[in-house]
Length: 81
Image 1: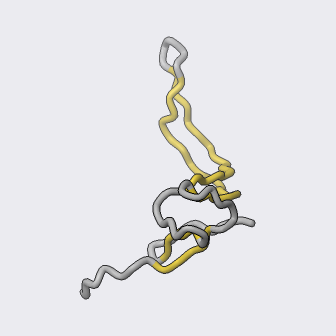
Image 2 (image 1 turned 30 degrees about the vertical axis):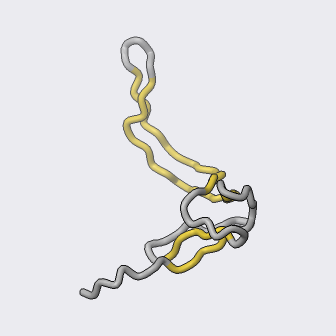
C-alpha cells in the first residue's frame, strides 16, 4: 500500500506506537542528472531533475511496523497572522 507524502498541513504517525519522527522510507525515483566528471574521472552530480517519485513503503523505526503509518494533521502553532 502506497503512503502519501506529508504536506505542510500533515505529517506521518505510526498507528501502533504513536511515533511521529523516525521512519525508514523506501521510494522509487525517476530522475535526470547532469553529471560532471573531473579530470581524474570522479563523477559529481551538478543538477538533478526528479521526473517522478513513488513512496513504496514506510516503516516505523521505533516498533518496526510496516504499513501502519497514516497521515495526521500537524499541530497548529497557536500564532495568528
